[in-house]
Amino acid sequence: MKGSLRQSMAFLHTWAGLLFGWLLLLVFVTGTTAYFQDEITRWMQPEITGERDLTASAQGAVDYLQRHAQGAEAWSIQLPDARSVAAMGYWKEKGETFLQWRDHAFMVNGRGEVVDARDTTGGWLLYRLHFDLHYIPVQWGRWIVGVAAMFMLVAIVSGVITHKKIFADFFTLRLGKGQRSWLDAHNLGAVLALPFHLMITYTGLVTLQRVYMPWGITAAYAQTSDYQRALAGPDGLPTRSGRVAPMAPIAGMLAQARQRWQGADPGFVAVLLPGDANAVVRITRGTAVSMATRGETVSFDATTGRMRSPPPTHGAAALTESVMVGLHAGRYAPLALRWLYVACGLLGCAMVATGLVLWTAKRRLQLPDPNRPHVGFRLVERLNVATIAGLPFGIATYFLANRLLATGIPHRAAWEANALFIGWGVLALYALLRPVRRAWVEAMAAAALAYLAVPAVNALTTSRGLWPSLRQGDGVFVAFDMSMLATAAGFAFAAWRAWRRPPGPTPRPRQTPKALA
Image (cartoon, rainbow, N blue to C red; front, side):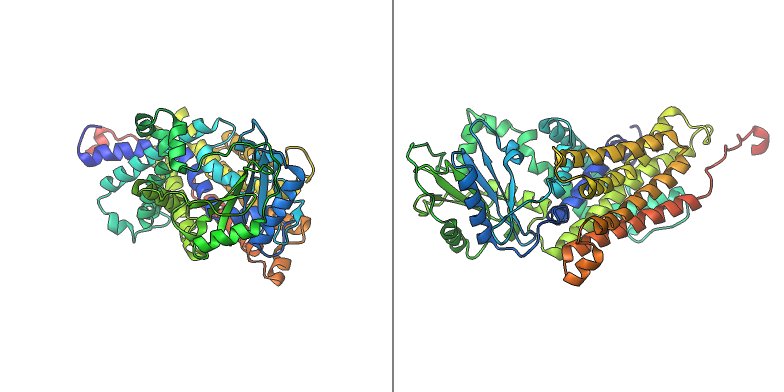
């Protein structure tokens, strides 16, 4: 850390990027896919067809819940938005938490019919993997990702200070120059989307700021529950009366909510104490109409359908936080802007991946014998292969498992998630056992074949393959299969380039005084 500011920042940039680079690549890759998580879920449930009808779906879900969950503590209905077709309904029994919703989940299409769709977490798994990780407690995952995000912010700022020619890097990409090419690719990926990288990292930390910095809440409120009540407004939880009363039609309440929001669609319905005379219906505005993610909620008496007093307006601080979360999640964005989010996310993936490769390319030439590196260097090389090629291979395995696993097996959604990590683990183990140059070629080729197999298996196992979807004008299925083919082509090109690459450097002869003379 001795030397000039730039030298100190270069040291900080290098090691902050390396120590968390593999985890940050996971965060960037899965976070980028999350901008199309609804479309991924639609592809992973091919049984759901038809057009969107929000009111019919909501009423169909309520009818199903009245038949199967009349005495539950609460009902919840996730309404379809412009990017989905079906509503998801579930209920909470006494003593359960909403994290157990999958035990009682069901789907309702645009005709109000319950659909027997395959059990899958769809794009939601990749979205949650982005900040919760998997197989570990949620709080641990969020803390680990939060620390990585903070180091990412440090790496971005130190990288900006380190670069002397940041504007020249915007136009520079020299191919076939070894270490120089990796540096150019790293700089280009960083500079092209620098505002996005700063925004997405900072707002990502803001989304979980109550986890990372809870002291403001603990200083102002005796208990966290008091804070939650203040945030929700004075309309507290209802108490059970013991008198049975039918629920008014949900369509009228949805219409009143739309009128209040000047035509904006509802996104979520919660029914507290369904079937009781004191039951309350809460309808929350959808997040697709505004950058602010904390949609306004209006409450109704379930038995009469009459709207209660509207909740108080949130203050400037809460609105600012909500806008930052919305900016990070991008749910408000129209199609073209979401593709821009994805393009910037892919540049972030390239920035992290090329930075990891650059570390080994630069230090190999500094080794006493570049052909016989030490154990730590070999570990970094193989972790690079295992993550840069292995993680995408695992995601392709996840998509393949969705089509190949039997629809009726127990814990099917969990086995789909297991398939992602099994595929990733197998390729990572293979990379650890093979010579690094061969590992790059073979791992990239395996990823290319896996993504090429996704549309082929989809065509063989469903009636919604690429050609039928083209004829029917099914844009989601066409775009998904085309994305898989494009990804396969990208990995195939990378495998070809790795195969064509010249062999690694030979040991440099040591200079003697005579040679220097």
